[in-house]
Image (cartoon, rainbow, N blue to C red; front, top):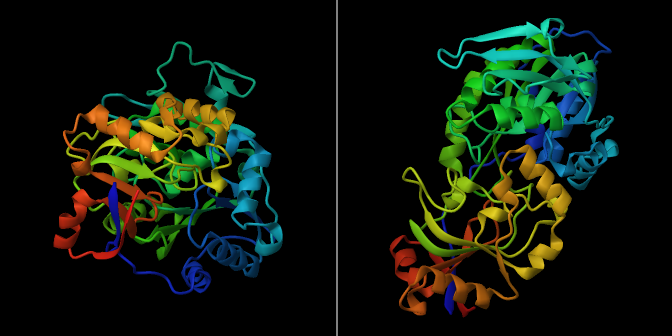
Length: 432
């Protein structure tokens, strides 16, 4: 199959010095704190660009303010759902105690702060303190006769709860499954990330697409009454996955500011330049790329694992996965959203991590096994036969590195006229 490689235009606005910009943003915040108090600074499981200088900037600001910061993984059930594996992921990202100049404290233990009730009709929330809950046993609630969507226990990381203050640091972007004015960002980290496996499991059962923003706001409001949340640092990345904007936000303003930052993030995010693709090869997937291994927003599968809905673009008929990122450490959550993969991918998978993540997220299909073949050529032939296209030369095939890096793309010859019309730069022509 004749192919060519081209370069598309992406939004490239960026922060020249993330550490200095972080310090500048942090200096605009004013906190009511006492010297010597502790502050838990969150760290994500995502592969966030410039996460080391950004986190160092936050830590240094608190240290110079006389506080005692420490890093706490806020990953829900990610990285295998163990304290050691979450700590190791931070080390793999370069977030070490020697670089940060502060401790890293990791634990999957949670405390039950209370119960959140949301009226299913008018969505007015009522909160019960833990002492008023009848069915608590061993820090758990028996929900055998209760619908999770209407009654939600609020779990929170034990180490973060014991700190005098909490500060959030996270990237703000589209969620891979839910739609709303608030999606993936600071409040999601507060609710799900700091809920550890206990909280992640509860919230994924409690929310649906039409209630995600409602539940996340209610839980955030509740937590703000239970902990001392100083605020957060929102990170927005450009089309190349580099830091484009940093915004320090006081706690009461997080929801409103996150809405604005999400709009910017969506306008700057990278996209595939075609409306319809027969077969999309993704060279690597992983948790550092997206919660579902590859960003469902990019491939047009946010609402259904295997087809575009609600006017989504692009329409991608078949997806094939060629490998996993080293950072994902075998977690192939999202592999089930692909129709095909190389056989070598299946040998890379840590099935315990993958299944645990998929079950916790209530997205079991994300861990299912696609059809596997030893070569890309075999995948092309299988996909072509599946779709019933009359001529293999007209088969529309695209290769990308991953859904975070879309500046340089390889495509089959059938896309050449479209690329020329769009004014993109053709780099080279070859054969697959």
